[in-house]
Length: 317
Image (cartoon, rainbow, N blue to C red; front, side, top):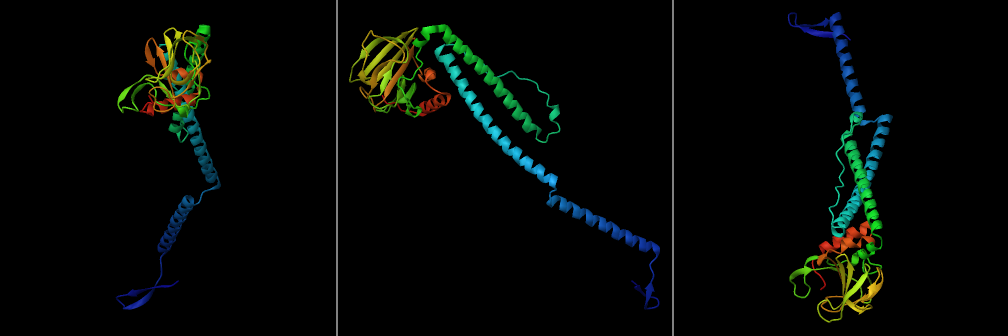
């Protein structure tokens, strides 16, 4: 293409012939511009459009994230289950054997994570691995401790049946849990007073059983206070009280075995509604009965009873 330029001296347009240098610079300019455009086009394509390999990697990452979330949920469930087992074991040690519970936390261990340097979510993997190791160690400790408890019970022989370890009614549902040991609101006077046992919300006529082997120390038939009640002496400082009964099926001085029917629940005495008031007494001191139900409850039932009892602020007597 011919290029013309205006000659100011001659006042006319003259044909301009480009030098080889100008031609070379022009070619170089367009060449560099094409490279820049091609690079930008590549960047845009790379950002907007995934390669087959990238699509597979992203799909794998999404799958791994979902699996990790499921694994974390299961580990949380395991953590809760172990915590409940630990709580029950501690209750058995403290309330029943009057002993200090062991420390279930594992000792700190040093782990080499150098091999994980190439993994993108290294911190995530490490935290998950550490948590799983801790849960495994704690579960081992609790398992060993439960074995020790079983051994201790075996060594005790028949005397273990003299420790209150059952719920005093059959087919009990944890939702029937009422107020337990502690300062509670009296339903009649609306004042706070000490509640010395646990209220089990069962209908009139529910069969009541002896929670441990022992001798009936006292039978009371009354329209006042705890109403019709039974006090059983199990020895070794243990006694149990069953109050507000509708029917009493034992007599004072009678020997009863663990699990034997001794009466039927009712609403006698100073009672706000039908229920069984049950007490565990050790060395003349009222105990929280729930830890003593270890022979009748699963871990989840035990935890549910503890929650309901602690959140119930008013007793029924």
